[in-house]
Structures are given as C-alpha cells and as structure tokens.
Image 1 (tube, rainbow over the protein chains, first blue to last red):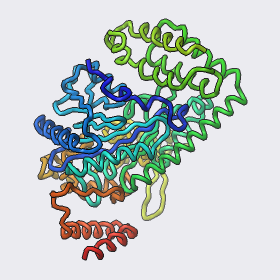
Image 2: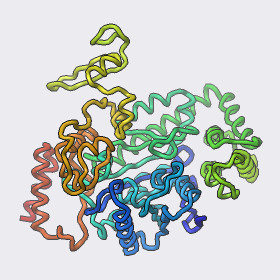
Image 3: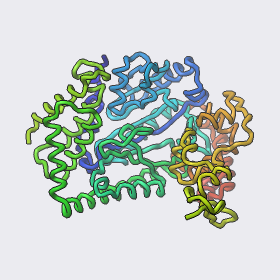
Image 4: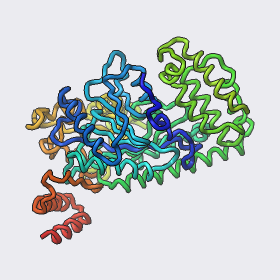
Length: 357
Length: 165
C-alpha cells in the first residue's frame, strides 16, 4: 500500500476549514490544462509516446524550482485500492485512476504532488496542473498553480497558438486551459427550495455546477462544485474574478436562506440537525450516501451554532475518511466489503465521541 | 401552449435563433423539433460535448461541423469525423488542420476564438527568442485580431510591433 504520509498533511491540508468562509465553502480547486508540442494528445498516443511524455515531465519537474522533490505516484504500478485513495482525496480524476471495473491504468499515467499543488500526467491532456486551498480562496489557488505553470513552461515546450491560446485535447478547455471550482455546501438553499433558481441562473452567467467529485458525479449531501464553463476569450483574471463574484453572491443567498429558516422554522431546523447528529452518533450501519446526507444536516447545525463544540474540521475529516477506500485502508478490508456500512458507522461513532457534545 | 408547427401537440422545446440580427423564438413539440433537425435533450447528452452544449443553453443543433468529415490532420492522421465522434482532437496540429471548423466551434462554445489570457513564451533555445520570429508572430496575431474585430487587442499589438520594428 502507498504511504500517504509522504505527502504533507497527507495531501489534504485543504480540509482544515481554516480558509475564508470555511463553514460554507469547503475548498477551492483550480487547474490548468497543458500539452507538450510534438507529442500526440494522450488519448491517441501509443504507450511509448505516453512514457516519453512522463519522462520529459519528470525531468522538467526535477529541474524546476517549485516541483523539485515532488512525490511521484505511477498509477500503472499502483493497486486499485491505492488509486481509489488518491481519487477520494481529489488528487487524481476517476479516468486517470482507471476505477472502472477491470480497467488498468495505461503506462505513463502519473501524479506528482508537492505541497498543495499536483500535476496529473497523461490524463486527457499531457499535464493537468492543479492546486487546492481550504475555504474560498480563488486568487491564492491561481497564484500557486500559475507559478508552477511558469516554472514548467520555461523547461517544457507547451502547445500554444496565437489565436486559440493553449491547445487542449477537448476544445472546451482551449485558451487559458483554466477551470476553477469552488466546493460549496448549500443546505439552506435546498431546504428553502431556492436552489433550482440559483443553479439555473449559473448557466445564464456562463458557470456550471457538478457533484462532489467533479465532472459526471452526482450531487450528494448538498455539496455543489461551482465552476467556470468557458476558458477562451477572457483572461485568467477575468475568469476567476467572474466566478468569485458569482460565488460571493451564492454565499450571500445561502446565508439569507439560513436566516429565513432560523426565523420561520427554528424548531424544524433544530430537529433536523439534531436527528442527523443522533443518527450519526448511534447508527450501527451507514452507507456512504446516508453518511454524507447526515453530515450535511449536522454541518448546517454547526454553521447555525445549534450544535456547539463540534468543529467543521471534524466534519470535513469525516467526509474524506468515510469514503470506501479510506475506510477500507484504515480498517484493513476491501472497498467492496459488504461489512463496510458497519465499519463506517463504528468509525463515525468513534470520531464523534472524541468531540462529545 | 401548442406547437407553432403542427398546432396539435404541447410545446416542449423553445428555440431561439438569430436571423439577420433579429431574434426569432420558435415553440415546438418534440416530434416537430426532431423533424426540423434540432437535437433534443436526450440525443445531445449522448455526445461527449453534450453536457457542455446543453448547459450553454444554445441547443445542440449544428454546433459541430458536419461537412468535410474526411478532412485529415497530416500530423496525427485523425479526421474531422474522429473528432465529431470522440469530442477529442488527436494533436496540437489538428487546430491548424481543422482551423476554420474549430474557429467556428470555439466561437459557439466560448463566445470567442481569440485567446486574451497569459501568452506563452517557449523555453530559451527553442527559437522564439529571435525578435524576427516574434515580429512575425505578432503580425499574425494582429491580422487575426483585426479579422475578429478585436480592436483593443489590435491596438496593443500594433504598438508592440512598432517597438520591435
């Protein structure tokens, strides 16, 4: 099994809830898509091309200021459980981890991690540079990734076109190659049934939403990832600024919705949140989805100061460690184990007991 | 509300088109929309770009080029049809090989095909440190900026060209 302790904070420093608006916004993630000139894009590439791309990226990283000393994970050499662990930590995409049944990662699939920045190699694009921050911190996330981009760009020939900008395998990413997303918890808007309007409004201002694990994932536990839709025709700063403005508005709507709930239905909200807490504290079997939904209820209670002495950090940790591969790794079983719901319930009970209310 | 076309079935699709600078809105039932060749939600979602196109709220019809499917990229051998089917290009050169088709698609997807973000300078020794090459590159950018009526960028480029000349 891989040793995630090699990574500072296990690669999950962004979970510590220290960032701005940490109780509503879990994390901010930003990525830049880049390709190497002279190599066919990953999906059309032969294994030898992919290995050559990884070699060039590894050499450049070792020679760079920001990535020298980065930890490298060769996904094609990792067991499925380890690949799933990296995916559950939001460090690699489902595709790069090849998590579909029987799928094996192709040669050259790799992840480099240095602090809170990472580089996926041979994903849809040759390089996907990404950074994660705690809370709502778009500018900081961009500044960090941009430095790695500049650093690698001095050492590697990126595919760039004077009109179309950075060239990507899918034209939806061309131009800046930038996708910024904010993982946000919106139970107030869901409970007041205002969420539909908000999500509809996003499309009109060029933004999109996804579930907890990004593209193609479902919305669970009232967690939404809001991100920019277009990547071309606007500068990086304009894209980030626009997303930031809209997210600030959504946070405001969420806070207003919570005020409305507190004013008009305080007993119902208190009942909902304490029931969720009670179930988490005493249940003997929990599916991941149920755990997420209950954690959402408790998180709302903590945000409304109804449940004292329970930290957002604990809730964030539960979000990560109740996922199948994390539980399996902790408890020495397999992610598909039928006993996993029992193991999960026991884990949640222990975690909540150490922070007794 | 009844369909504008058959006036029998309930309207399911609202289609807004811009024709000669005027906005025309059609209210159609599913069958009539399909007959007129507009893709509906289900079929759009099946294509790799479907989610994106749908979220753009522009309807999927004719977003992807249909003619010239046999056009082939000399560098990687992939065809325009390959791209239409997979939603992925074969290599960076494909952007040159399918330039006009892609420019059209990029405009529809992003509202513009002109990159205005960070500009990339290749690593030292790769050739573009040569001011003559930079000048050529800038002139090409200027040509495109004028073509795209991006006059703000064109003015900026013209100033940079003057300095170099």
